Length: 271
Image 1 (cartoon, helix red, strand yellow):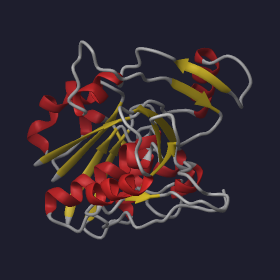
Image 2 (tube, one colour):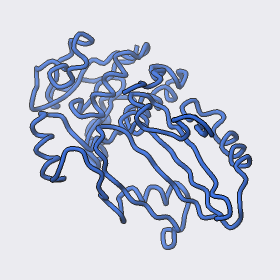
Image 3 (cartoon, helix red, strand yellow):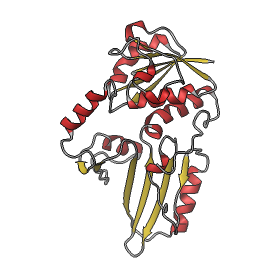
Image 4 (cartoon, one colour):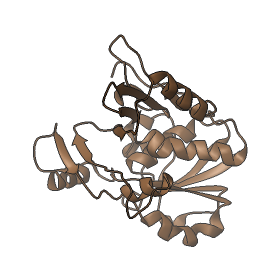
């Protein structure tokens, strides 16, 4: 049994990671850290875990040696901490957590300060120059000087979920049957990528809401006849496939477990 610890277990991602690992047949979570509420039970911050664990938060200074260490820390902080913790664990999984639940009031105050206005909204947040643009340019092997890629972020009033709509301007017309073949070939061995493209019904394209608490990435597409344009749509639960779920999937790959281990939850409907 792998003995695991989670540093920064109080945030959205840390809570999701704890929820997943509590049900993982090959992992035992032995330590979770949170400075502000040290000695409090995990369910003090994550009420959905009441009755599922008796773990209490420890201070970072009290962290003991373990087999596997997860750093569920804000952007940049995890990389700064890796050398500090390198001697404690055989493997390190680096997670990002944008939002924190150290205290619900803290989160509400932070959000209202950063995003004043009504609770339910749709707002252009970063129309240009989002920090993840550099990652997309890198992973797509584009020329940083002339990437030909434009990236905008819109905030909407949901707690979790992300939807990407990609407009691909083509040199020639494309047949959707060809697109199906490309995607099937590329993702045939990926257990958590599903193609979603229906001509009838309500759920014709990917939707974040129905992926709630699942590790899937749904991908769909539609060709715009006569316009040399292909619109590709992808949806994830950003706390799962975007963070905690991918960390557990990486754990499974590192230790030779089936990739689906601990990640079989299909999502919720209706929500």
